[in-house]
Length: 337
Image: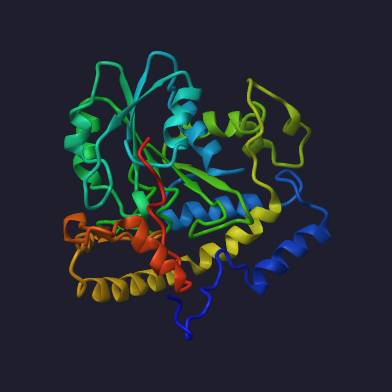
């Protein structure tokens, strides 16, 4: 039954006045494209600096970022790519689109992430890469995964779509692997007006290949040597497509990036309040990461112990009752794929 004192939860995303003003300023300038404005380039520079990586490429969305990551490291026909059995479908479908085969690894029941042990059990002679998804903002245990990958000459892609601001052993998620990708879709911690993405790496070869492909085969080297106002801007050295971000998206992202640490801190405090309360309720299993892992809490998960429920109750019944009180509650953000 709905409580008479219940209030509607605020919607997400919420765009503050400074973010709306930034979009308006871009529109008024008429410089709305990557090649006429400066917001996208500045967003890339600031994002790379925040993560402490060398290169960042702003993109239309997170799915294009995944495709670009696979392209940049040379994944193609005949390759196997290890992906989690629980993730958003784009993690796996991007592999299929590249002509490769997704191989599903089981997940840890607490973090809902793949582990080095679940990865080892599905490795094949054709394994080219592993996509480590930091599920719901909880970072994977990266050290053993990275060590195993190095020993076996396998490349690592971090899928950080849900993990903006998360850290692993005081290192920013997205800075640990060969390449990493972020999503700025409407419900993400950073949300650039509906869609958006970012590709990051410390490898100049991967960066140049990705940069060229996302912009119709133009050369990153030529852009850096001649400047954006030169006629060489329109020289195409290879085949590519258009994955560019717009200036409006980037103007929002730049402002939200400056707020990210504060936002993650708020999410962590809210998560602690929930954990403190839920831990007093029999039938609920509460999980939290080790102290050397900073969870970003894109989502907060609590697990129902079904054997503790009365016969007429199940997870769906619990969710329905919670929703009646205007409290948002869902059955997981991603299903098994």
